[in-house]
Length: 634
Image 1: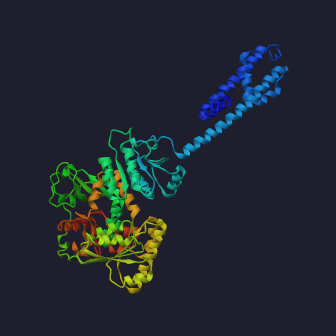
Image 2: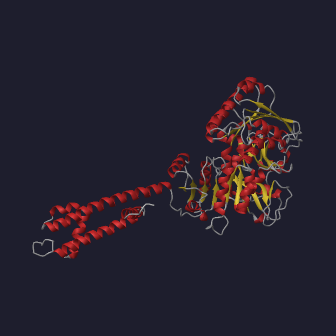
């Protein structure tokens, strides 16, 4: 065992001294300066070394102390010193000590400032905001969520979004400033740190937040990170007494139960693969539906509100449908919390019930003054609907959601329908075989090949398909996946042009910026999966109860949104108002919330012909190919 020497002890103490930070070092330097000038001053006074002035008087202790201090801080003052060699030597000692002390002080200050700037760059200071939206984690979805919350906050005045992610603060700030063009009055504050760490989480001040959004990252097991983050919020030793409002994005169904078990009523989950699968399935059979969902989910136009109207108590759902000129009622929230979308027209509205309505803003949900709605009974169609026909669907591509999509599609199509899947992914063959055994209404066939193989596409499309779905490859980078989708769509457009055939094409895009490029391919609809999930999470973060509304809306059971032929409701070519359409839908136990004009179907500036929550009194003339947007059970 090595013997500890005096040198080792002194070096150890010096290391400890240096590790105490800039403030401690400055204090020690100050003490050293005091010791130096006091010591030299005492020696000068005791040895009577200081020279006399012109009047023959020698400086006192305080005057000599002050001169020594000035020499310590400014070594240049020594040039004018006079006196015997003892005094000059003492001043030389003070000057040399001053050079050492001042140089060290400058170095410490420079290092301390650099360290402080580095800390600021890393974003480690406590956020002192209140009533802010807190986003935990980082993914491509964050830009849409920030944009939507900024839009929602425009009527709120000053507001704040705080982001805590395990990412460099400067990188976050740069990326946000380049992607978010106009945040309005909303301030965006970023902090670097791991959300599952209690210390880092405290920096973002979750206890004063209005809502918390937990994003699913891009790691090998993103759900594990989300669950641990929810645990860190709910089980935080310093948590607030009031319940949190947490919105968590998950990828696996089994994770939902765990997350809700942890957070109970404080956590609302969004299972992104399930939601996107259902929207893809619904949209492939009804082009234009994704535009309807986007309109309802973003804050830029009309969105869904839960509205209380005491004066409607005792009236029926049919009365509510016609009562609001600038809002479209689509359901009820019963006093016990049960969600009823498109209930029976005779459903009584009881005290404590609230309306689910679509409106431009919550202050636009105003009762009309009259009861003469101008309904043209003669314009309501009397024709019976055709029996559902079998459908043949072609699905091009493969990702983790395809299995769920195939099961969902089976619940919508008629008995005897068929489905062909084309993919080059080897593992798909085993999963297809497993899914085949569960399908009840459609047969399933697998073709191995790439989705942009032109000879294969020519061969496949020699048969008749009612719907074509292209999905993005989630195993490769988003831009490459979208590029492959674009090539496939260009082939499909060319085949349609050369064979003079038309078919419904619905395509999934990963990046919303590629949607404009894809529009030249002539596809009927596009699903930007990440964007829709981001929109939904933004809506739920602003209104907790919308989670149950959207959950009910996207279920295959119960009422969903459909785009149905206008001829099922009213006579085309005849001027009428939307009150008439609402009444025609009510007679079929459905709720009309808008319409789609076929002539505007390719015009992005007109929302691809989709008109959600139109002014009910305005006159409109429908074409034979137009569609009515309704909530219906089938």
